[in-house]
Amino acid sequence: MTTAASRQPAAGPAEPVVRTAAGAVRGRREDGLAVFRGVPFAEPPVGEARFAAPRPARAWDGTREAYSFGPPPPQEAGIQGRTGVLDAPTGDDWLTVNVWTPDPDPAARRPVMVWIYGGAYKLGHSGSPGYDARFIARGGDLVVVTFNYRVGIEGFARIEGAPANRGLLDQVAALEWVRENIAAFGGDPDQVTVFGESAGAGSIASLLAMPRAAGLFRRAIAQSVPGTFFSDELARDIAAAIAAEAGLRPTVADLTTVDPRQLTEAGATLGARMRTYEERWGPVVHTLTPFSPVVDGDVLPTTPWRALASGTARDVELIAGHNREEYRLFVGLGGQLGKITEEAAAAALRRFGPGPDGERAYRAAFPEASPGELYERVQTDWLFSMPSLHLAEAQVAGGGRAHVYELTWPAPGNGGVLGACHGLDIPLLFGTFGADLGMLLFDGAEPSPEAEALSSRFRTSWTAFAATGDPGWPAFDGERRLTQVLDTDPLVTGYPEETSRRLWEGHEFPALPLVR
Image (cartoon, rainbow, N blue to C red):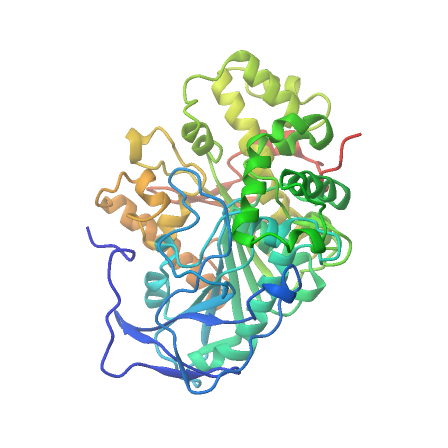
């Protein structure tokens, strides 16, 4: 099977050279594209720079080879089917960008798409095979950029003496690099679209609300936005518990005494027993991660939903959407498909349903649903689908433009039991069916004509939006709520999850508090 992930780079006789602000880089020619990997956009965040905001990359002499992805940021091991650390270089130069361009001609001024990976804010690497951007760049005749940012403790733990949301600050630095350098690669710095999934979409929601990111992109695509944002008080309490796992205080002075690759063990240990903190941390202990963006009042002044509703990002065109059975992936990975009890469903409804009467409301709204269906539905809604819908609604309320989609086509892997689950949009968008999560969702098999057609539709819509602001379906509004349903036979209809929408109408998705 030939996929974007399985082809090996081959050096061409005339390797492309581009001069960036920091120095010249030499890439490779691959499948009709010029590809540059591992270009520093910031100094390695180690030593005195550890836990600091990113600093611009130092200039270099001569021409730097940009053939290989930079090393991943320090992180714990991944979950099944979504490994964070793959075959990659080692070292401290974590903050690098990669560029796919049809031609590094400064006069071309092609639209630019910048991918921000997900991974529960604790995993991720732009060099993962599932993020090979060649199909997007070639099919859309545009420039695609991917990059690394700090995750886990290095990027998101609330540490005394360090700025909050360092991972988000890395993203801002990467976008500033794009603004300053992308024209030399054939891109248009005034036509930048950020796109990302899961924690990447949560990052994009954050960037829309961040004053530091204003003006760095014109359009945004947020795929499966998580609703988990931490209050500063909650984030500090979680950081203290993580540091205690290593016998330390949550301060820069203490944590810099531990190698960043070893410090990840403290986060992993705490993550494995988060549920013992439920009385203090609330529903976050039932997620996969003790990390999320922090509403600290400075880097992130308020939640994305509140910021967008006030008009903060009204000049940015937005796509926001989700998959129909988001949470089924996690039920499946946990070996719980078909095993959810009535007691487990009741607990989930009480824990995640909107308001104090969430369980009764869900049971009344879905009277025929089984315990397993209720368990999945409420967690899909709480964690991904309603935050994504509400982001679009907030954008429209604030005077901006938004388009909404739902992916309903079921993943064929494992006999189709996972449905249109979380992460399915990634192999469909990138065409990387045989890499990363695609191996689980497609069983490593040759994609069907149906899958290929839907994959092509994803790329066509996303790249058209990046070029023109129009993905091929009408904008969302508060009356008709027109939504693009992505399936074998795509259609535009009123928002498909109307029952859930009504249950969550008026919910604000506030920053999660420290429970007293």
